Length: 369
Ligand SMILES: *Cc1c(COP(=O)(O)O)cnc(C)c1O
Image (cartoon, rainbow, N blue to C red):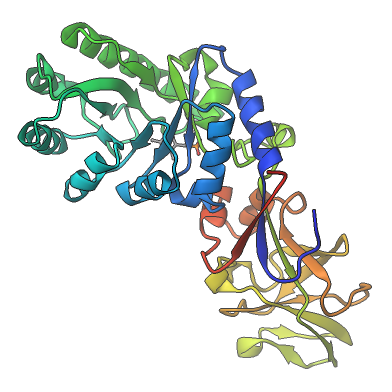
């Protein structure tokens, strides 16, 4: 690790490799692995993360939208890519880039079948998504008849997978609900397979699913947050390594007299002589206003320094009174300590939101490639 000279999100590709191997160690060797790289690889960088995953022999990648898949193809990534939430308006581009759609409703299934038929395409890979309780996206069990009617002997497409998504795989008290989701998925997927006479991959587990319900790993799993170093569980987090470290530097130090204030609306008032440091990172970079006013500390020379006053668009101020530091010194916003999970918790949110919210303005830097 090198010292920061400006705000950077440092992406540790060795940590990614460690997490990938850790998650794989929880699975049977034959279970395929889909790396979820939506939302810029959970805020890190979809292309670099995908390249590393391809090097590690990942079987599949997943993105949310067509545009995200196009960016991967343009970067030369050739493994199969599942688009979790495509829209019909982008199907042309999806076909051109050979991205594989998740089809989740009778309406979108029909729109896709119509298009591939018009274009005389044969055996285009599709994935069928079923809603088993999340109530977000997916066919219902009662859609099976309709699906079978459209897909039986349809040579335009090939069902390469049937899948579902868990609502609360990280939540021990919802285990009975999760078990019921698995049972329903089992029933629906068996029914589809039997009636279509095909052999698609089945998959339902996300990261917490892998860790808590490995018996439901079927043919493939889909992991996102675990690859980036978080398992929605403090014990698992000790086994994983954070991929992203957000670093910045001290732009300026200020000596503040008692009763002077710092920042907009004067929300920080010094009670004694204080030293504050101004950092070149703000809410436009993804450190949102909820982290202001003493919610969390960052690290200066290994010592904790609380964020004081209101978070500005391009800056935050921290209290470094009593710390040995200078203008230009490195500051760790999150990484190993505090972790993104701990940082997010202080702002009443989760690592997923904090990581994906680090804006594109922040430079990405790769280490241990
Ligand atoms: C985002 C997503 C995942 C990955 O979930 P993690 O909890 O990050 O492992 C898997 N499947 C679907 C359908 C998703 O939307």
